[in-house]
Amino acid sequence: MNGAVLLAEDEAVVALDLSCMLEDMGVCVLGPCATVAAGLDIVAETVPDIAILDVMLADGEVYELADRLHDARVPILFHSGHADAVHLTSRYPGSAICPKPALPAEIEAHISRLLAQAD
Image (cartoon, rainbow, N blue to C red):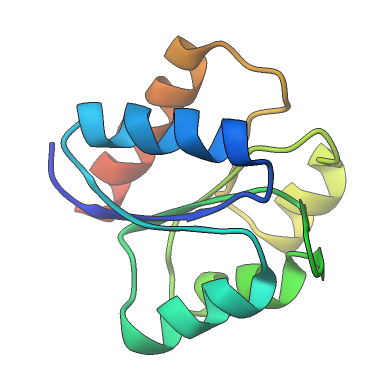
């Protein structure tokens, strides 16, 4: 599987686990970014195929980054303990939501589906 995935996650252990999972899936990891600002810096340089976003990052809510990605038509997986599914799916139609904690197989299934969508 190919593709570039922007990972915005401020919990170091979760970020490491997701990065390893993505690398094992054969995708390029952009990040992980612990802040919205770091994610915006990456998006200014390159547009990822998909993004995995935690709602609450070290510098606040992820919505500015999510808006930028959504406007660029980048599929988004919200992986968060702060995920309000109704709000997120109405603001970001087509996005996927995977509340924390989630089984690795569940996360991988969402990632595979979103990468297939991005092709």
